[in-house]
Amino acid sequence: MQFFRSLFALRHKYRNFALVDHKGVCVAFKQCRLPPQNGRWVEVEEFRLNWLQHPLPSSARIPPKPVAHKLTEN
Image 1 (tube, rainbow, N blue to C red):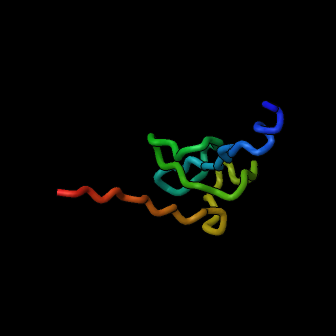
Image 2: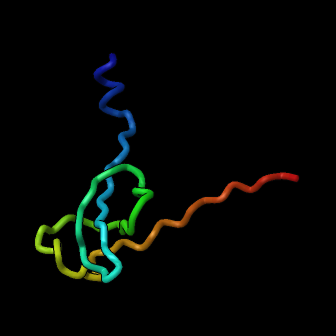
């Protein structure tokens, strides 16, 4: 039974991020579920090693996802 549950369980998809310096040059890649907090990380569709040490193409960037804000009742 556990096997069938694991087949249908929701899995969090890893997202791809590229670290860019102040000039927009790609210096690193990272895969994680949530956006990295420190540094200038931008979400990209995929990794391409030829982007390293070169300006990150604007077509590679994924627009930031809107953050859902909780409404508080006063």
